Image (tube, rainbow, N blue to C red; front, top):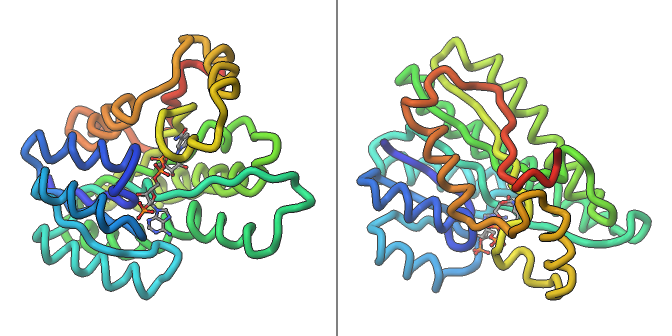
Length: 237
Ligand code: NDP
């Protein structure tokens, strides 16, 4: 398969790149700033690293075109790039609000809009959006993040209906607390509390999420579309 993964330089996206590449698939990934990380991943996996800011439709247009040439098409898109933020509702600035929505919601829209063109021509494809359990249950002091991730739920459902007849499946993974740099701001006590609130009593790993993405991308999931699936150890039950 030919896979495009956004936010591949670190965390969950990085492990997705490694998992698909290890299993013999052709992979291209987007990164925004961490050229060092992107270069080392490209070297270790053979995946094509492409700089792209998913908040910019122009950057996305050029980068998806480049990925399609490098891969010879696009079978699977994983919309994983994201940022998080933590602030009281009334102290979120206009810029912070816009950056969150632009990255975590509009970014997935821009990249999907370009990638789908390649899938429509071959009448098959898979889109996997990486949301968050906070898009389902809402997180205090993360109103912008929760709103963006809830938006991904709606986009997943609507797009699955619209392009299912064209042979394209669209699903959304909602991770719980996963051990990545995104959670680096949390103290040990915060992490211990989150762990205690997780019925399976542990923090998730990027591989927990990547394994579901791998399954959803595969033919084994060929009758699954429009689904929102948690990988959260039961946190959001
Ligand atoms: P990380 O912070 O570890 O990595 C984020 C990735 O997104 C990096 O590769 C980064 O690129 C990329 N990125 C950020 N902004 C942009 C942009 N504007 N354009 C292109 N790429 C961008 O995050 P995680 O791996 O933890 O998170 C991955 C996804 O999983 C996110 O959507 C996140 O919301 C979601 N998630 C994570 C959870 C967690 O607990 N970790 C829980 C629930 C959901 P660069 O390295 O170049 O900066």
